[in-house]
Amino acid sequence: MTDDLTHHDETSPGWAPRPVSLAVLAAVLILVLIFAPDVLLVVFTGLLVGVFFGGSADWLARRLGLNRIFGVFVVIAGIIAALVMFGVGFAPVVADQFEQLLQRVPEAISDLRDRIAQYSWGDALLARATPSALLSAEGGASAAGAVTSTFGALGNMIIMLFIGLYVALAPTIYRKGVIAMLAPSLRSQGKDVLMEIVNTLKRWLLAQLFAMAIVGVLTWLGLWAIGVPLAPVLGLIAALLAFIPNIGPILAAVPGVLLGFSQGPTIALLAVGVYVAVQSLESYVITPLIQQEQVSLPPALIISAQLLMGTLFGILGLALATPLAAVGLTLVRETYVARYLEREQPDARSVGASRR
Image (cartoon, rainbow, N blue to C red; front, side, top):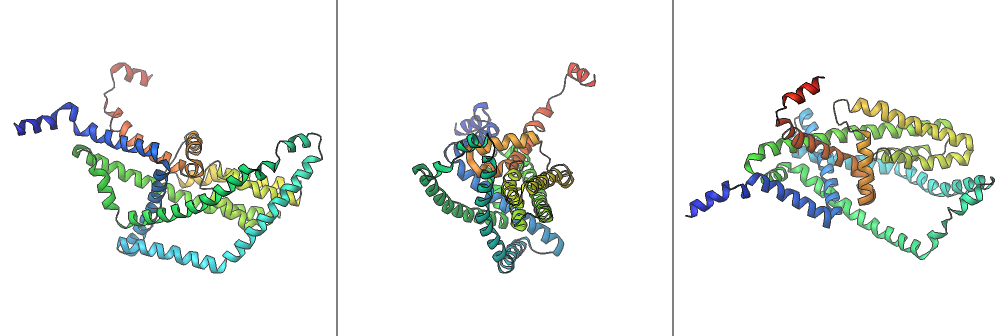
């Protein structure tokens, strides 16, 4: 009798392992999104760090014949050495330039306000943009919240690094853990989909880092050529904010254009031209060339994902919108489209319509 019940439970449609395993995974993901979305974003960032460490270690292992785990430690040691060298050789200069930037941007804003006030419409515009709200009680609370969030961000960064380190050192453990939650009949497909997601993130990271470096160098050289002060630190800001497509370059252009105004309207217009030229080159030449055989996401999808993630989760969601969109697109393509829709046999009418 027990054998009959067991056999009935395993074969009954109401207890089929395939849909139940998928439903459990979906339910867990939905619950985390509802009750702890920030945790999910921190974990995803840690996975990105792990993909970077692991991908770099795999590259070293193939080129130098190293053990993969040893390759991870070589990568981390190389990053630490680079940071130390940067700290010794360039950090004082960069810190000095950042300090000058913090001093000169308010001066540039004041100069811009004086120029706007010279026009008849300037007073009305400036009246709507007063900074008095920043001195109110809410402004003080916001400042206190910013300090608190800074300490929270440092803690999150440490958590991300440790997640990335553990994933890079032993990816098989975590991959097997995820696949074990699927029904046995789905595990082979799940492994293929998971590997495709990892490969997608590796290609996206490689393309993104290369594009960020090019954007930073070109912005630095362009601003230096037209005489904008603090061009190196402005190039560094442009490189870092290039991690956020579409919106990041706009944010990066603000301090450069303001400092251009401090040198005169002509320099400001030239600075706008530099940022537009670099962004156009990155969007229409650099990124398409890098991503010819890598990750290609529709621009409308990227902007929509940024709006959604930025509204729901703030700056971290905005920064992670593109890789999350890449993962989502890969999941849809590899599961819903390839393994569900494409299995349907088209009828004669649809075949005829597609040929016409």
